[in-house]
Length: 175
Image 1 (cartoon, one colour):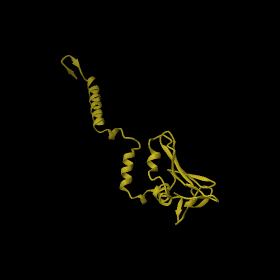
Image 2 (cartoon, one colour):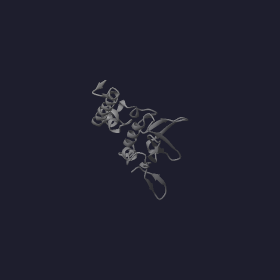
Image 3 (cartoon, one colour):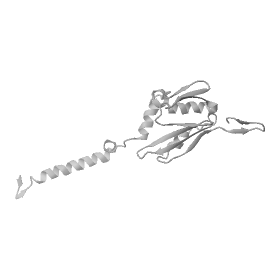
Image 4 (cartoon, rainbow, N blue to C red):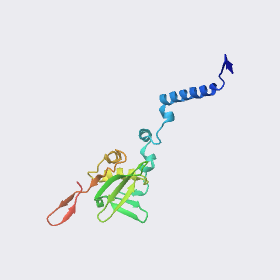
């Protein structure tokens, strides 16, 4: 196409490309979630969780645990343990940085051994809720203390059995 003595056909594709780029940038600036959304948005996850009953989340189902009045049973890889709540001497949690995300690890200490579960363990949150009901002095806000800030270890003691020493015997008492 020629206007006057100028040949302009070669410029039309560039004009179209430039106009398209301006329009796409304008849309991206006005609506950033359409183009630049996080792969994992914590606020959206909290909103979804608050709208869904706890019992519908796998982490709030029994998972590897079963419960009775004074104890719980946990199915580990090598064995099945039945543990009385008063046998627990310490529960602590921390995070392991796995580059793209963190893994929350929970250690459950007994008198002569301990085992760990993590945030991928089926039923881990129901276990923690049930532990908070059965262990006096359990730190209720443990999750937010451990989870934030991200990519920090945040080692936190959630529960510690208080030792009471008598003259004749050593006895443990929850406080």
